[in-house]
Image 1: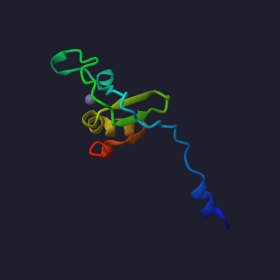
Image 2: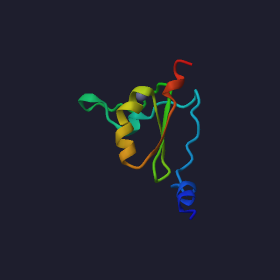
Image 3: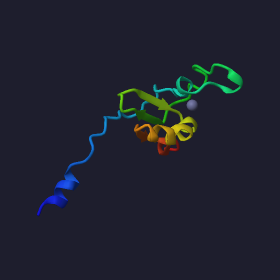
Image 4: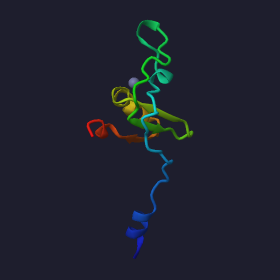
Length: 90
Ligand SMILES: [Zn+2]
């Protein structure tokens, strides 16, 4: 029987998640409004270390802070998440 091997080889096809670069900037403002009803569009703009690709193909990047904040919700939405926060201290 080769079922075990077959199961191992056939994995869900995850969308490609490109590596992050120093030019990727946090998109948190595209997802959440600021506190007190303020519009926070473009407010964060920190260097991004977390990239999430949604099943729709939408590609979002977040700084470490916002990546952690939104990671659970993104995962629940079926996003494929690439977390490079461990490179911050490199
Ligand atoms: Zn941010």
